[in-house]
Amino acid sequence: MSNVSFLEHRLHHEALTDAQKLSLLRVMIANDGFAEGLAHKAFQNKGGAVWRDIQFLLFDINLRMMRDGFGLGTARAEREWVLRNTIERIEQQYLPREQVPAHLNTPEEFLVWLKDRIYKHRVNHSPLFDYFDRDDLTDEELRYFLANYRVNMQRFHLHVAAFSLIVPFEMREELYHNLHDEFGQGDFTKAHPNLFEPLMNHFGGAREDDVNAETCHLLNTKINLCWFADGLMPGLGGMGGLELSIPAQQKRVLAHLRRRGLGPELVEFFVVHCELDEDHGDGWFAAGLPYMKTREDFQKVFDGAMRMLEARAGVYDGILAGIAQRRGIRAQASSAA
Ligand SMILES: [Fe+2]
Image 1: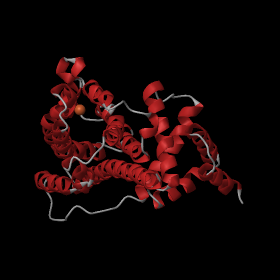
Image 2: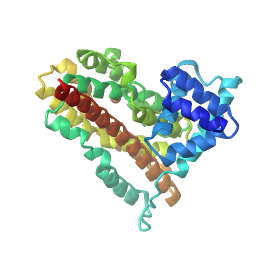
Image 3: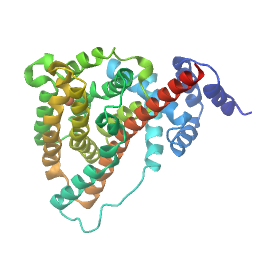
Image 4: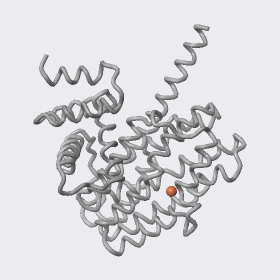
């Protein structure tokens, strides 16, 4: 067995804690050229063990960056940059490629087409929301859903803020307007992360082991598209796509929460979002319109939107799989009893 496959074997087959896994993964990645091979393996088998480990590793690096900064001038910054860049370069090779139809030549025509594609995306038809429609979720399953939702919700404003660094001056107006909404329009107690907490706590709070690899992947994707973007277009597509598609999903969550009998204070987060985000989506694209000029721009906006929505759909896939697993375990336990 080669060194590398020995390490890989250890990574997946021994009872290691997450922290141990991460440090082992760092050792493997420090091996020359290993990150490259590992990343290919990960994206050839999306959702598999290597892919999951890579998402947790990047997530860990990203949380540290948000806590301690990038660390310019340190060995950490250099190591993490190589890792980030390698993983992103290889992930891009495995992204599905769909061409924007040749007849779309003006930004206005393109936007009509894009919005239609966003509404039709599978993220809006995730079977997870059928559970909400049917009121078919236990308190524990709802807690688990909220815990995963919370990971990205808490940091949403940071992507807007970071992305604004490369957004043209005029377009920043829209982004800062969005940030103002995210922070409760001047009332910090109504900042969206603060609105979410009473609901989260009502169901027992979030636990670290709730967080799925798919949830980490969405955060990692947003960071790649907004913080470390290659130009304006991918983030414009990605964030606009999210803002346009999310209210339809949140309406179904909200209706379910109300049928559960939760009071106005507990559902306020979802009430606010059903009203605000659709405006945000239109606002993003309207503000970006002057900069989407060429067919190449359209393609990048479209690719960014689809990549982001696919990552978001992945979050729901992960939650569905977690629910199915919990139900399977429960069914086994009750048939054994
Ligand atoms: Fe929000």
